[in-house]
Length: 225
Image 1 (cartoon, rainbow, N blue to C red):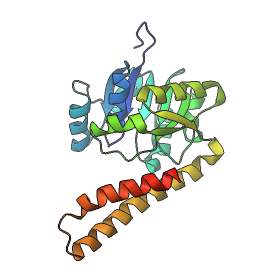
Image 2 (image 1 turned 90 degrees about the horizontal axis):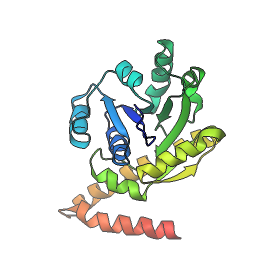
Image 3 (image 1 turned 90 degrees about the vertical axis):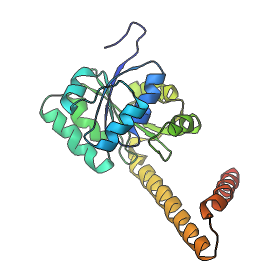
């Protein structure tokens, strides 16, 4: 359902921490969120909190009704999902298909492209909580965008509508980009957990409150240098 001002009917596949947040951001930009496909109780709770009134649909229903399909699923699930929907003829010519997996470019969307869909890869480089906090954090976020040259401006425009900044990552570099993202996320989680444990052993009652300002300031200083 496209309105007269060119806004899109957006369907979100995935009720994890990423999909409902990006759906809410696109809804805030004026797009119509037609539904979310999720089977978990946590996903339904996030839809209720971030997208009140938006229906939970099956994947085939959602793809049929959407002009932009946002695939916010784990990296390892993405290839089978795209291929499975192609096998049942779900993808539509001219439909925008966007995935958020950091380690994939648009090659993983080839089955959708073969059906006439427009493939875009957009990864917001931030750690999501799955709450409204993320909508504010998107304002300071950069998103890696990968797309065929003729439709790259569409991906960049969607990122701007999310409130973020786009940075182009070439298809050939997407796997390396994804590896860096995974390493950075793992390093941060492991390091903080270790520091918290050691401070507790040193007798600090609330180590996270002590570490928060220290780690944030240290990271900001390191990035500035």
